[in-house]
Image (cartoon, rainbow, N blue to C red; front, side, top):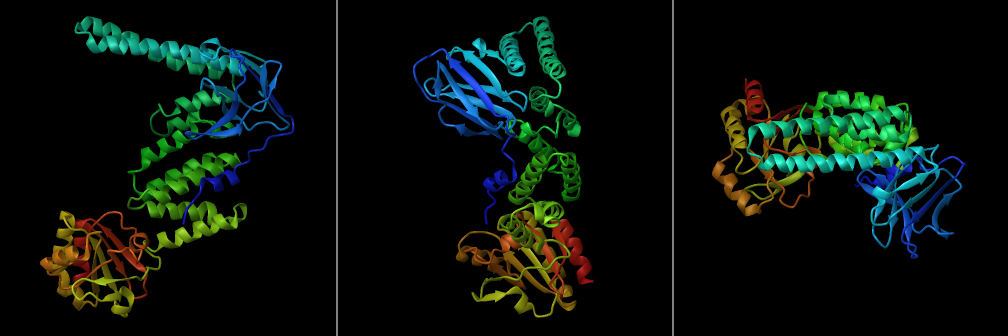
Length: 445
């Protein structure tokens, strides 16, 4: 199963209104060359026009429909220079003239105040960054403490100017792609979720910048260790901010869904199921049948490792006797204790010792106990270590990964133990030797 970015593009509206666009580009080098137009999407660029026609010394990008808002690139074949321009619905007819060797320094734009200011801002940033690098170098080698203090003051002043510059531009050009782009660019410098104050979720053009997805990634990083329940709460909060803009909403829900599908950490399967059920499966009408089927199939896999859902039966090789058994068939009507372990894992050794200590009580209370070696070593190696441990219960392995138990029981770390009731539903999931030991004690009483 594979989730593809192409499905996301199918959900995003990339057509404009019927007013059209015309962007004339005049580099200093008059030698014929390919001049391309592309746009940003996350950290990649996608081609719009492979080669603009030449008309009276200008390369002209022209279309009958408006371009979707965002940051675009004019790419010169000969020099390899990539020149950024801003596009929004009111800013699609302008002229650019520049020296191929120094496009930022020499850029002259007529017909677009937003782009003219964009280049003024870039030139100021270049000056500030250059000066900051000089001061950083000077401070690195300066041994006089008083001089270092003076350098610190200058560095602080540069940081202040940097921060004030983008705020001034955003205030001067409100409700434009320039203001929204600069605010989004700087949003991740703010702590916690206060960064969302600087993200205009109604600005669709942010999708076609390198900055918006970084805000989403920052949000994920700031909550990834909070536990599944809090991640779900924060995810809902973020998605609610996007509901006024269909494209932004589709992008954010898809990005989060796909992230938690592929980021393997305990509890992330539960986050995936939460997003899938709340934002996709509860309202499938807005999505393709193919997409919904993919989401449903992944949910079925992830749910089998969640408390309250049906567990997944699987067959694996019994270590020692070498036969293959199905955990459900062999256990009959007994409830099951199923623990996954690894060689060389001290926490696993402690959990195994706890099972040994409580084993007679577990058997007395009707439990069928299985452990599964999660290693990809050879069967002979696993067998030697298992026999050395002298387990009184059934130990299993699947060195060829035929059973897919790692998917169905979301085995991303060990030890992890599941309790499966006689109805074959997950009754409990325990992670770490402490929680496992406490649960075993209660089940053996």
